[in-house]
Image (cartoon, rainbow, N blue to C red; front, side):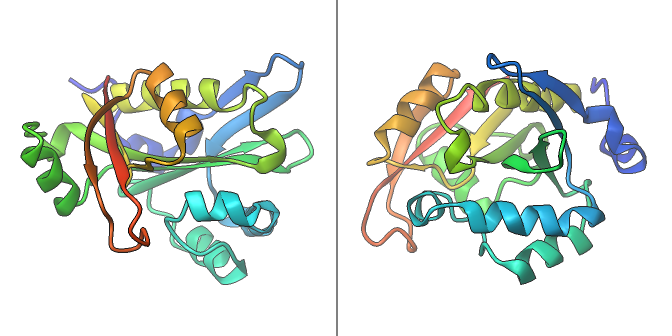
Length: 201
């Protein structure tokens, strides 16, 4: 049985807020996105290099997108988490979706993994360029795993996988316990293969 219900998070987002200390003594607050976060979110989007944006593409990275995401918050469908410094700057932005899309579930079924849509979720994590390789991602991912377990999820998938040529990310996810289960060629991938990866919770 879940220890936490999404309706509780909708009523009180602070239930899944975490205060994280990095090895360099910097403190982050990892919390759900709120309607007031549009200015900081667009600043984060615009800080991402073209290379980072190309590897992480769930949506556009501009002012209209930041405004839309902050105006259409519905934690019962998607929880967008941001890691904020004390002064308010965002260092990371994670998308935790409760609904895994049918084409992705179908691919997993073709790999021999018939996942229950009610007990799996998917994650699209990003860390700002200046904060990569500084120990930011792992404690944030650990907290995401905790949230998903509390909400009764048994598996977490990488949203639309990870580019196979992004070997640093592939190895990183493997260190976090993700398994590569198959390869596919997305329509938006310009002919480049992606690895489907998931992790038991």
